[in-house]
Length: 320
Ligand SMILES: NC(=O)C1=CN([C@@H]2O[C@H](COP(=O)(O)OP(=O)(O)OC[C@H]3O[C@@H](n4cnc5c(N)ncnc54)[C@H](O)[C@@H]3O)[C@@H](O)[C@H]2O)C=CC1
Ligand SMILES: O=C([O-])CC(=O)C(=O)O
Image (cartoon, rainbow, N blue to C red; front, top):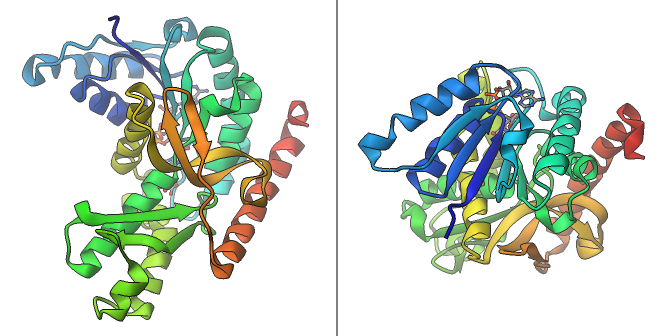
């Protein structure tokens, strides 16, 4: 069986980490693409030289030519600009929208059968725009944010409950911004919902509320510490988990920005919801029952995403 081909558009902090993880996990051969000359080639060479030590023989090349992504099975897009302290993700919209146009056209022309995972911010608007610019089927274009946001929530919950993070599952829905919706009713330790754990004395409502808030601003907390950019290890790990679910037809249920066609009362918008990812791409949107508070919070988050799409359409008339 021929090896799979993984194309990484953007060879920056996340792109380089994605390439390292994909090689270590043996996902396939790797193409690192960037507009900056030398950087993808240099990182590809550096990563290739891990092979003799780690024992992987993936072919890793760096490129500035979209022709090299031809035939890619999975494409992960991190091209664009990351925020710095004092900026919101939404401040990146104008500049990254232009990048999505170039990337979308490059994918359409060279790898239209790929499963595309967008990571570039502001995520929900960029994945929508990337899908529009590429013209790929909606189920083959998805946004990564929920896996990361849920990983942050699970990490904080495990710390609070003093239990293994392996036993914690959590769900964060909605847009990847300050309005994201961590859902405590669906967050559990070995199946025990967080509200029950509060009743059992593992924590208090106030402390869990603070953890919800910390999760919402989890990206900003890291931007404030790094000062020169944003988180990249956990975002890359999260993108790889989605790629593996597609490549190995794992049918994992993961929160991701998916195209909604009426589910959760939302039409023609990408927003974070639980989905099943398998060989068909986003095979199903899972509609979980939400309580009134979560519904109201999701609606605020959806409105924030809608505003970003209006801004995109204002900048690029081809999106109307
Ligand atoms: N969805 C999520 O959960 C997360 C999203 N992000 C976002 O991911 C993006 C990438 O973050 P980093 O890798 O840390 O940034 P980075 O600045 O390290 O890398 C971005 C790379 O994109 C390249 N690039 C710029 N324009 C390009 C174009 N037209 N075509 C190809 N490559 C191009 C740059 O040369 C650079 O190498 C940012 O927008 C960031 O906000 C970051 C963390 C989490
Ligand atoms: O906060 C940022 O700018 C990067 C990001 O999306 C995250 O780490 O969640």
